[in-house]
Length: 69
Image 1 (cartoon, rainbow, N blue to C red):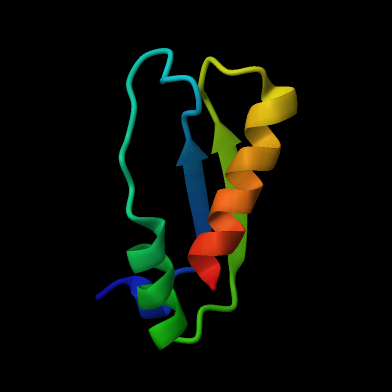
Image 2: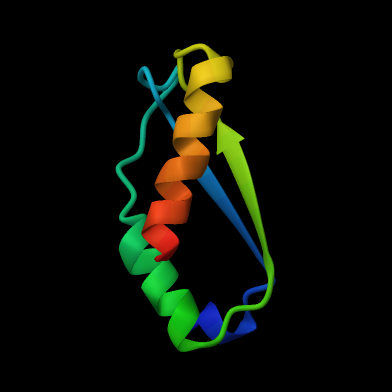
């Protein structure tokens, strides 16, 4: 119900496991909901995993791009 009013989506990823917790989010489903309402807002990536950011951030971006297809 909130999707049509959404302006900003913050996507969290946890490669290597989360420091404090971890989430298993279905980004394909989330992005399909946003597509249905013609989402035109912003997307931010927040990486909190234990893996080296030099490898984990590119993996996170690739995963989000794949989910958006």
